[in-house]
Image 1 (cartoon, rainbow, N blue to C red):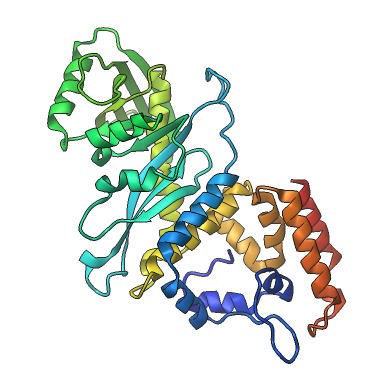
Image 2 (image 1 turned 90 degrees about the horizontal axis):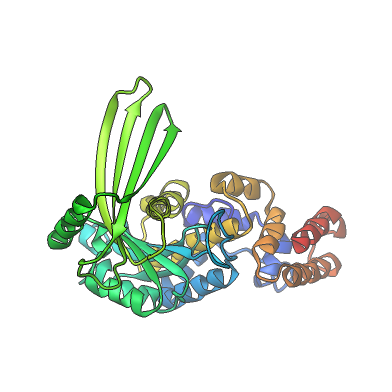
Length: 385
């Protein structure tokens, strides 16, 4: 939470933690003074190497899922509650295979579209790929009222049948890995005289982007749960109107009532897993630059990074790097952030207030004035939400 990118930095950050936070984290105490002791970088490494990362990831993801707030209903959505989007995607952690890229750790995760938090993650066995691990990933997740999105690799009969059987919906893109299905979808759209159409124009970074979506029913398409097929075309122009690039993609969905606009939105939001999770872990936390060869280190550090990102996002913050810098400048600022991200904010803040009073009154070699009333007020603000 203070932006450490490796175990040495994590040990340095821990050494700077105030007694309040060390006590709240359950740090062991100095037998002579009673003051809480910060763990060293070596201790943190041993913990990361030795934990059961699979079990820890399951618990962390369940904790985040329980605290993720329901998606607010979008304007124009029908029904009492809009479905939530869940993006599936895999990530290979570089420098985790002891010099052999074939042995690098591969993780497969599921991220909520609207809040950009990971609520499921597993390690992919070495002898297989993420495509075979969809059930293992999603079994702990309630898929009712959920739209699962995936790239073309996941447009598989078994995956669609699994999601549909569990009362979820899907939106998948299509590529050459399913040539017969791709041909059928393209022919279906070509034969439709009046498919539903939506155009979105975006001005971004000196370019003008046109995104068009066409959708029609999936009658005659042999794919589990298929309700609609769609085509997406993306044209990028410079400011003079000269086209720079053109991309066309096809896809299939089980959503019967979704408009072309909504389908395009589901596809675009899917890629937030790359921008808001993988990019953050790679660039801000330097995940691919940390040597993590032994034990469960690579997996456990990935789940800790997911937890940090999740806590920040559940507290309503969207600027991860800025928030980490803010917390690094004053570690007590983490208290209201944790209170804001907690399921029961009031109970969390009251529990921390007990720790504050224990530290202030205890004989830990720190003066009572070192824990200022601003910390207490910050906790109270966090409890108020």
